[in-house]
Image (tube, rainbow, N blue to C red):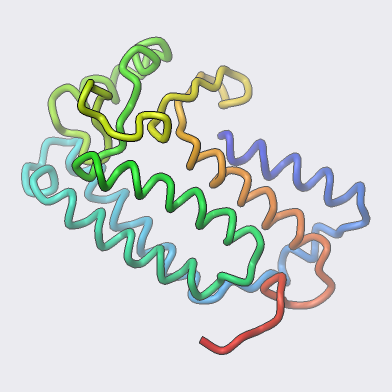
Length: 195
């Protein structure tokens, strides 16, 4: 929901500065299917792990690694897009803190309990969440973890908890939307280069 709010603000600012909603249709991102595949390699194993399928719980790191490789490739192919550059920063920060903490994003336990994410809380405690773990005294780079509390309505109908990297991801969606509205022809928001 947070990302949608960012996009809505970008749409308003884009319109106020002379942009056109129809120009968004001209936006061209290279190999968008790679990003979609990366999403599937995280979401499907994550869902099945949450449901208790031990294979996905035990090999969650492998699926996460494949997802990271795919997303990195997509980001590289679209590296001339300002929004993608910002997205790359967010991805890198999240990947860094996740990788050095056992392939799981550390989450502030107190905030998770505060926002009443019962399902997430129980999944992390039981080890069914293949992407998150509670912050402990051994957690490295805690400041990059999910420690930022965002209250409703900014987070949607309920509060949420995010990381610094997530904020860059949200910003990237707004930037891509804003500059897409300012385009007059198909573009990657920069010059077209061979890869």
